[in-house]
Length: 413
Image (cartoon, rainbow, N blue to C red; front, side):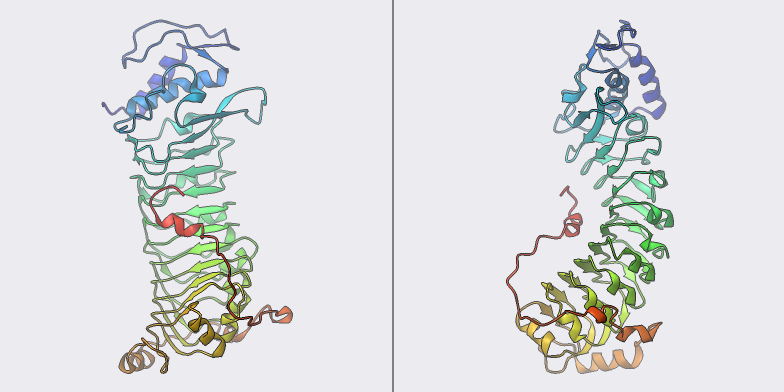
């Protein structure tokens, strides 16, 4: 199929706009003339003038599609846009008696197109665009002028280049998913100033340090895993104490110590920093994570003892500390090991099985110990005044599958 340019899409918009008739807009008269792309210009009937406006935009985009193995565009014909596969209509907030194109869901369609520019950015009432698992390329369109837009999912496509700055400043954007693309470079600080609830940018090629304003967005679900991010976890993470529920930072190149402020995250249920270069003792503030269910610190450079207060957290279902250099665990932690909750393999605890060799542990403590800034904070338990943690033994619980782990699969969830 012939690949069309953005200018061609603009031309088609003008051409088709004068070829439609609305039930409530009869001042638009049909004009019959041959279409250069074989799209019929016979008289069409639309439920609303707003649908007549987007019809030529959809048809122009359809003409640019290079792959459609499932024939999802097969019924994108005629004036009944609300019944096109993947298109959803609703009453727009500014006129509840009108009907407009409000949402698009192309998840799993396997469509290929060289660009989305001239398409989603030209649909004036669009609020949601989901397009997981397609082959869309090019730049992400500027959607800042779409007054109702709040959800963008372009995961598992072939978008490339630097972080898409076109999403910065979209006032009501609350959901951004660009995982499994080919983006690279730094993550701009501006994205953390937006009122996002969901931010998934994992499985790209992002590098550079996490910005200092990392904790400025009220995000609830955050996945930055499987990139090449460097530097330390900013102390501003503590500002997310009222919002953050799940965070995945695994498989990056993060360094430095785990900040004391992580213990402020009282809504946190999942924290995973496996496979980084983080070091230092564990801050006792982690014992304030009352709601934590899954804590994974495996394959880093953490050392010294595992705080007993951490092992006493009653909602803890899985604590993975394997592949570090811890030397001591107390009786409460040993109960977790016995119950299969705590994984302490490949550490330096002398009387536990499956530990590192004495030579390896000695070399680490002689050559690679790195002391942390603000050492006085590592023994502080900020919630101590209302400390209600206690050991109650292993409880039988059914843990709901974490949302963010599903983002590590390419497909929709």
